[in-house]
Each structure stands twice: as structure tokens, then as C-alpha cells.
Length: 287
Image (cartoon, rainbow, N blue to C red; front, side, top):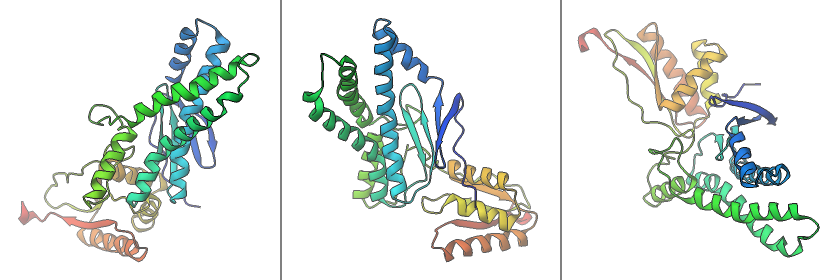
């Protein structure tokens, strides 16, 4: 079986468990949340533990919504990351606006459903004999509502490391209405603008450009079969293409570059993938 590209590095995190092929990674900063709840509850460890667990459930529910929506559209989920302020679901970029919008909104939809269910169940809670249920209900209502607003707020990725769901949704709807090519600017794993590097005289190589439709495992397979790269090197190259928007890969000769690029592109077209893979050479006379 082909090994799928690994999740992006997540320094400071440990893998808590694995659901199917999806690792669940927890960052050490999540302990700050526990400390804040402990102080807020006036150092009542039982109350703090209930609030903290309920808060973690909200984060997990939100990321699970993204993951389930991604899987429903046939996208590969690479990892779910959890930290003190929220989480992040890593998955392959969708190929249609419908898939992109639904997958982006799925976490918020899951939170809204939980809010409605909690409000409906509130009259049945035994507040006198089971006060811990009140703590959970308060988190699922008030804490949940705050998280929904924060996720909907259009946070520009130029000011933070990752865009909010609200920002990505606004950009998706705007681009869809204008009938622009699909792009998820600021979303986790979104492609960065690619700039071809300066090439020396006599250079021969293959240029790969990233796109939202070609599966990364397909490109990994082609690099292994056509360029005889080891699995680790091929996976690393594909991740560089995905995160940088493209990659220039040196080849020993012009003929080798043209032959490999042609074979890879023909294999992509045969499967209906829009992968751009082309031979690039810099003749001495061009300089």
C-alpha cells in the first residue's frame, strides 16, 4: 500500500492517539488552558477539570466536523492538531467550491448543532443533584457561543499564522460569485505563491506546479517510478511543492528532464489530473 504524505511538522506536540490513519496531536500549550480554568474556578480542581474537559470536547467536535466533511468529499485527512487556543485539521485541498465551503463550515455547523441540542436539553438537567452537568451545559452554551463568534470573525492570515473559518468562507464565497479559480487563501495547507528561482547557465530540470486537484500520493508515486527517488525523498519533495506552490528539480541532462516530465504529465492526464510538470533548460546562449 502506498504511504500517504505525512502531516506537517508540529513542534512542541505529541501524538496522543491515532484514529484510523489520522494522528491526533496535542501541543503542550494546552496545559495553559487547564491552568486558567483552575485559577478561574478558585482552585477547585474538580470544577476546573469539568470545565476543561468540556472545552476540549468543543475543540475536538469542531475539528471532527472538518475531518468528517473532508472524508465525505474523498479528501485525505493528514492530522488533527489541538492546542490551548483551539485546533487545526489538516486535509488535502478540495477540488470544488461546494466541497471547500462545506468542509470549511463543517466545524461551525457541528458547534451550532451542539448549542441547539444543549438548549433543548437544558430544562431536563438536574441542577440540584448534579451540578457538574450545569458546568458542562454552561460551557456548551456560553463557551460554545464565544468560540462560534471567534471562528466566524474574519481574521486575516497576514496578522496570524492561520486564517479563521470566517475569513476563508468569505473569500470562498467572494471568489465563487466572481467565478474565479478555486483557491483557499489563508487556509491551513493553502498553496503559497510560487516564484521560479534564478537558474544557472546550462541548467536542466523539471518544474512542478501545485494545484488543488492532483493527489499528493500520485505525485509521490511518479517521483519514485520516473526519477527513482526513495519514498522519504519523494514525500519531502511533494510536501515542498504543496507548501511552496511549486518546485524546480535539477536533472542530469536536458533529454532526461524532457523524457521524465513528459512521462509524468502523460500519466497525470490519463487519470484526469491537471498536474503541470514541464522540462526547463537554460542554454548557455540564453545568458
